[in-house]
Image 1 (cartoon, protein in one colour):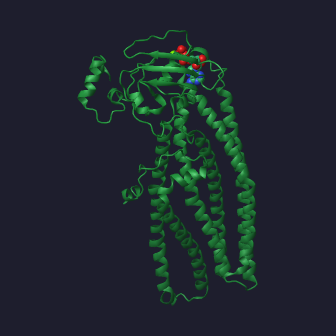
Image 2 (image 1 turned 180 degrees about the vertical axis):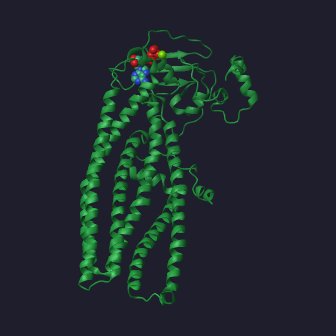
Image 3 (image 1 turned 60 degrees about the vertical axis):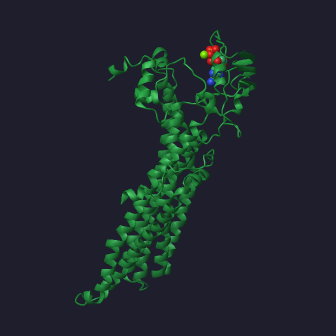
Length: 483
Ligand SMILES: Nc1ncnc2c1ncn2[C@@H]1O[C@H](COP(=O)(O)OP(=O)(O)O)[C@@H](O)[C@H]1O
Ligand SMILES: [Mg+2]
């Protein structure tokens, strides 16, 4: 049965791969659109669930009134029928609605939506240029992709799972109280006013504090990733762990975390006080009504139950609201990186490169990586087909830059590069790179098996071809000796 829920929406379904919107709500609307039916059904079940809960309290209150006056001998005879129906609702309808809703929220929605968001974000990020990646930290980008899934779904989940349930429940409670005795809505409404006040006070503060925390946390993660990635530099120059700036970042993140918690304590104690006030107010008022003959005993039972339930739920809701803002903060932070438009894209009418002789022309090329100097300045160079050219120069004179531009890892700030007369910005990036072989400065080995490294980027490559490639690279000698 659960498999059916998990396959309700395919997270890897095809989609329109545009740049994701930077606005968090628009991003959610776009990415969670495939889940619209699941969400609608879940919301419907939320309403049903909340209505059953409120109805149960109303029914219990009626039952108390009946018990207060009924004679035990005739009780089953007169009320047995009704009790059986109520029992069936509690025993069957309530858990069934709950199971269905949990399955929708936690199986059909949550994991699928998380991976849909992550997968699409990953695919978008992969299209960014090499220059874009050089300007950031790989580990940081990876955690942004991961967080975007968790936080985006967290936002949707808090709204759909918690806020909607509590909203319907509180509205139902007011309606129930009003239907028993209109005056009982007075303490309930006063309480709701104070609760709204507390929300208005706390939400912007929690929002700001969690934003500050997210910024500090993201900076800390960035620093850690940077240090781990350059561990040899660290060992050589900062082995005593001082002067790296890491400690300061830890302190900042810690301080921001304490700030968030401090706010939560203030708000939670405010909540606790409001809850107590509701218990005393609602039950006290019900007692007064009962004493002056305006209400029956059942009302007091309902008032006690409702005040406890609403108190617990209001705390739950406040928690949900504060984590909602935490998630929104995380989302905004991730979207700053992930929702960036692509800078190097194929021209709309790009065609595959047609290789004839392989003449390469750099025409008046300048590239300073967006700075005022450094890089290349007005370089013109023609390499004839079959010609072998060695570029020699001190470090930082722009040899690698020339190669980066030829591969279109960056677009030159000025000038053009042509291969056999075709401007490389007018051909597809894939065909351009397919035609260029490169032995890199550092040997690059992905963190996966040797087989996967050789087969990388080749979908249907045979074992034989892989073995042949290993042979050609003189790697077949040491491969069998690997663990
Ligand atoms: N990703 C980059 N961002 C900014 N500046 C860069 C980047 N890569 C190289 N540079 C700068 O461009 C200049 C040329 O670098 P590079 O082409 O790597 O030189 P070489 O390969 O000849 O040692 C240097 O001044 C270097 O600092
Ligand atoms: Mg170089």
